[in-house]
Length: 429
Ligand code: IMP
Image (cartoon, rainbow, N blue to C red):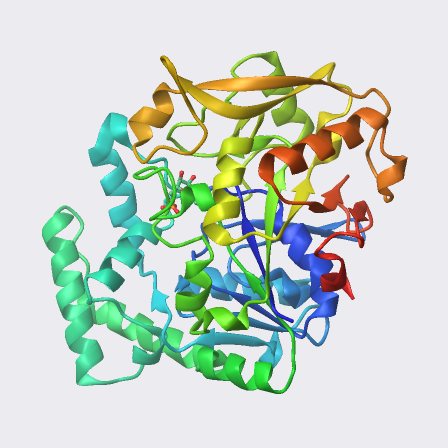
């Protein structure tokens, strides 16, 4: 049984912890899109690991971690991560597999990302400045350089020459030398070669042998290039379609979809966020939840749980069950609100509009629920949650239409409620 884990909000939902929790039941973990814009934080026995590119499954001995063709790879970031893991005593060895079809993020992509943001001025996206958008632009523009291209050939030399020339036309004050970039790419290729393979074929073989694959998404559905709050999105398909195209697997190979959502919500970067809280409650969520970007350190915008957005993610992705994270961050609040619809003048919308400007003009329609004073932190059984917290979860299940199969009550692996009586119960055995 292969399960996909993906974000049902604007990213940073806590997918890293959930993937880490599920990994012991799988032999392969496969990441399908995004790049080192992601930051998955995992705490193991009090030690904090922040992984950007390599699936957090690498922290489990014997598990193989795959990076699919849909991911864009900055070789420097990849090597840094491999070296940091080694410093912690974790050798990736042959447990890491990188698709030969994955595209590369090169130094000029980072520069172009920063430049493009500066040019947008007021309309900037608030990207992570990692070169993600420009790398995907080259991929779609059919001039990208892939992992399999990193060999000394006239084709690679020509592609690098053309790409660096195009970059030099845009950034005129610092000219880049294409030959230096070419040499650098060959060196990258030498180091990456041992990990490179046909990930689609490898997955097909593994599935035929009955091995279980955990499919991992980055960012979240509301940041999806097609289904998110365009243009305030990332440049890849974070939603379920990205799993098929980004790994080279058919839809039949995905047997269940676990969405991950925070018990409230956050967003980092620009773009509409109807339930954003600007006052003391928002500040409190940020401080209690330590809501600062794992990749960039930027403060995250915080708001109440938006059931319209999560319901949308449930529909677009076919989510069977949700993992609700950071429940403990709501401890002690007198009331907790849930947005169940958007009001637009006379009308009430119960689905996400296509245009970011319409979403920005919406006013959330809230239900207010009593909070709980008894802490949920570290609770491992649903029945041990305060009654108000149980009621809140039950209401979230009603308004999103799916069960909350996992409830996370703290950052450690152990601080988790797993509800085996839900549809997702057998995914954990
Ligand atoms: P980019 O992916 O760097 O191009 O950034 C585009 C948008 O996606 C920005 O609003 C970023 O803040 C957001 N973003 C990208 N990666 C993540 C992530 O892992 N978590 C949350 N937001 C992200």
